[in-house]
Amino acid sequence: MALPGDGRPVNARLDVWQLGGSYLFRAETSSVRMSRSEQQARRDPVPLLALAVQERGDGLHRQFTPLNRVHPGVLMAMDMTEPFEFSWSGQGASRAFMMPLEQLDVPSRRLRQALPHLARSPLYDLMTSHIVELFGAADALSANAAAARIADAGIDLARALLASLSPDAAVRRDAAAQTLWARIREYVRQNLRDPGLDAASVAAAHNISLRKLYNVCAAADTSLEQMIIRRRLEGVRAELALPAARFRSIESIARGWGFRNISHFTRRFGQEFGLSPREWRTARAQEQHLDTHQSVTGVSGGG
Image (spheres, one colour):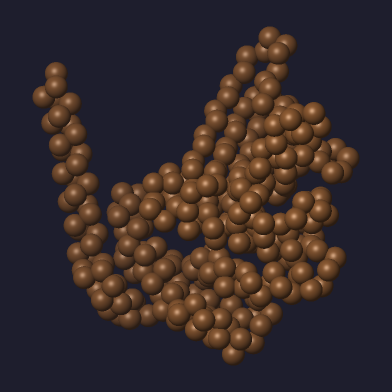
């Protein structure tokens, strides 16, 4: 990475989070240029694929194609074993999910064919949203014991994204079949707050029959309905613990996570976590108050 050398002040912040063998990398700088020449790529290949979403400012990107302008919200890709250029002028930021090429297991020829055409994939929006949401929870994810599994789900989705752009229909079919369960889980995760999320909407989104959907879930030893409920409950539990949600009613938070029947929600919450939603919120508030009190006391005592 190179920063401008014309004497202008430079502001830069670089953040990296590790997820198993993969990384989340965010760069926010006032002007930047990253590149690898053919000589550098041959001498010191970096066996990673970066899928990046521009966050702020317009970037300029070149790999396998002429120079392209990358607007905020656009997904782009860089094979780090190949020459590339990426830059922006003025304040800008970009977020990249960087995965090992060995684990991605996609032939280099197919990467060259697919990377310039990501926007043509039916999985483009899903992949873009997935990367943005990974960064929204980066601190918690990197500290999670399941970080490697979280990265694996992203790699599965990336593999399906690339395969969906193959000119070989057999490759597209095989990849779609192999990654269907990963795509279903990601679709559910991204649509948990939609009260209309159910088996019919999931099947329609993936162009499969309900019977096929239930067979895929059975092969994964999972009930789709129970998975949706459990993840919604986890979402409500996490939100109830937030100080910012202290003055929101439990009912409004539950409805915000797709629950229509509040009595059913309350009963399932108690079954899942052993406390009612109100008891959980009260317990967390008391813990946070105690932590704050101990912190203040410790600071005072240290003086």
